[in-house]
Image (cartoon, rainbow, N blue to C red; front, side):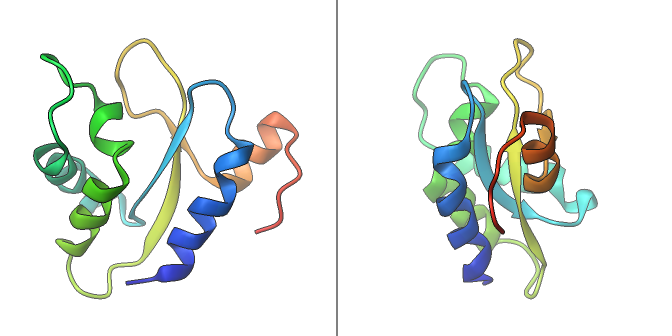
Length: 106
């Protein structure tokens, strides 16, 4: 598994705004839906109605879901933007930094 992607995610944590959060997942968008489903099944239940944040914000659940991806699947850091609809509204680090005028060196 690509450890550099996980290190990048960890280094970026102090730059997150509001209730935005990150997770590492498959670069290929076609694999994202099954990845999210796997992370949701793996993450512990923290409330009666679990939100996407509870699964994707759980680093252990997303790490295990990454291990279920086909071998060699390229990974990337997703930034999930806070929203009221429990929808996966995301950006990549470059876009997020540009929008929010954040100086972060990848």
